[in-house]
Amino acid sequence: MPTFDRYGVFAPVYDVLSAEAPLYRAGRLAGIRVLKPERGSVVLDLGCGTGLNLPLLARAVGPTGLVLGIDSNPRMLAVARRRIAKYPVGRVQLLEADATTLDPERVRRMLTAAKRPPLADGLFASYTLSVIPEFEAAWDATVALVTPGGRLGVVDVQPPRAAPLRPLAAVLPVVFGGADLAAQPWRLLERDATDVVQHTLRDGHVVITAGTRRETVGALPLR
Ligand SMILES: C[S@@+](CC[C@H](N)C(=O)[O-])C[C@H]1O[C@@H](n2cnc3c(N)ncnc32)[C@H](O)[C@@H]1O
Image (cartoon, rainbow, N blue to C red; front, side, top):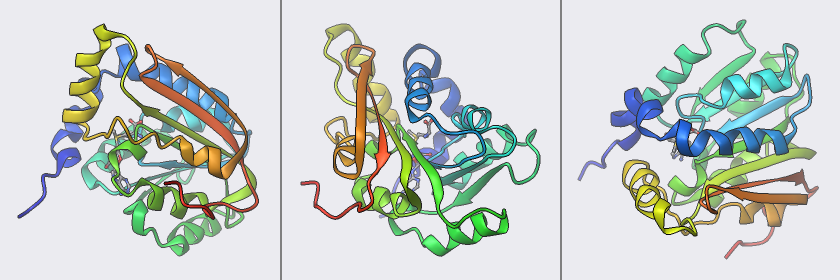
């Protein structure tokens, strides 16, 4: 049976229907704040979707930096492509790929073509890992492309503490986005990062976590 292409269908209306302004924008802003990408650095945006992080990351890394958005859905990437059209060629790049089976050579080739070292300086994943059933595989494949000592950030969702937000949180990320509110993908940072900082927004619904990549990552099973 063909699977429902959720993001393909919702791509044109994602920015409007995803409650960006009232619920989720604050999380991505806070996530990039604690990620602290350096000027001139290279940051991977895992599951970049329609590219809502891309201008924010591009601003953080500055004109000498590079942002590479990775997403498996061509229609989400088509929206992202329009969003980044104003940037000089090469400063914000997009790669269509399933992160769970990512060929690292494709990313290395893009970085090398952009005259960058073959490993990125940072990895950011907002509202992405909870929608990927095999999120650990997606994370492992991309975190392996970040230099030891690089910055790692995850912004994702869990059930809110307060009752008023619960119906909205159950409908939007779960029904619309296909998220698993029990996934807790930020635990990957407890495994793969040091200096981990974490806080929540929206009554605990949005969890913001960042840290510094350890020398060895993905060595221990999460569960
Ligand atoms: C809820 S959206 C989040 C988009 C964006 N990060 C944001 O903050 O708005 C989840 C994104 O993950 C992408 N995605 C899902 N599974 C993926 C996979 N295996 N590899 C790469 N991207 C994936 C979807 O296509 C979608 O664009």
